[in-house]
Image (tube, rainbow, N blue to C red; front, side, top):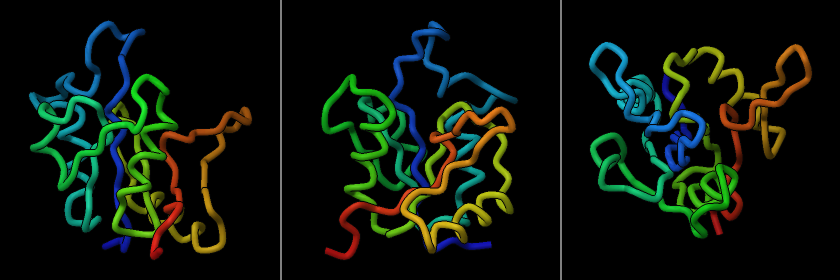
Amino acid sequence: MFFNATAIILAGGRSSRMGQDKSLLSTNDIPLIGKIASQLEGHFPEIIVSANDMEKYRVFASAGIPDLEAGKGPLMGIYSALLCSEHEINFVVACDIPELDMQYIQDLIKEAKDHQIVVPVWSDGRLEPLFAVYKSLFWGI
């Protein structure tokens, strides 16, 4: 399954609760961000890492985008990456979600045809905006 969309991996967090950079934590000797990137490869023509320290992520993506304003949180990371995306449709995933279900991602992308944002909702009503689909703000302008 191939998506005509950009995948955006959010890796710019401070990991303050974790106490260390969670994107580089290993699972089977592979950094989390590397595991996510390898699952996205072949499905997305463009993979962007949204982070302020791009040197440590350069190997995992076709592009790296720093936040327009550092320290503003994940929504600034999403916004900054959307401005640079080559596609109208963008799948956004946090760097600490190690297993991706491509069929579910495809379902989210299909829903985006009629919506600006498609955000999964947990059974208790909480939103999951860091595993969602966003349309680019100024795509095609």
